[in-house]
Amino acid sequence: MAWTWRFEKADGTETAPAVEPEEFPTQGDAESWIGEVWKELSEGGADRVTLFEDGTEIYVMSLHADAES
Image 1 (spheres, rainbow, N blue to C red):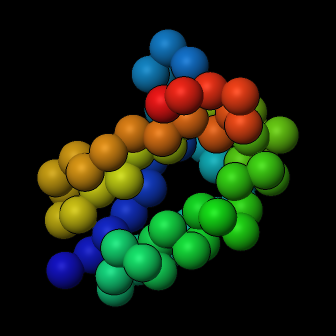
Image 2: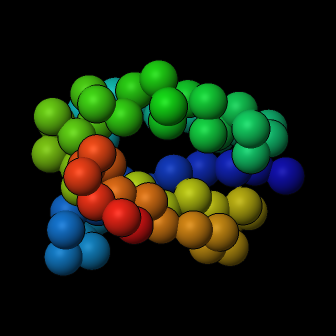
């Protein structure tokens, strides 16, 4: 089982991350990592991220502190 992130602009187009991710063995590991680097990712041009488990979309999250989703 692998957990991965996709990095997107506000319009949903994929963008390269400012911090290179890895595949994570658990959802908690993936979420801990995003919690540590979200600001760098946002400053690097990503507006939101999508978490996947083995290619299945789990959720989308904004990288902007003032956003609700």
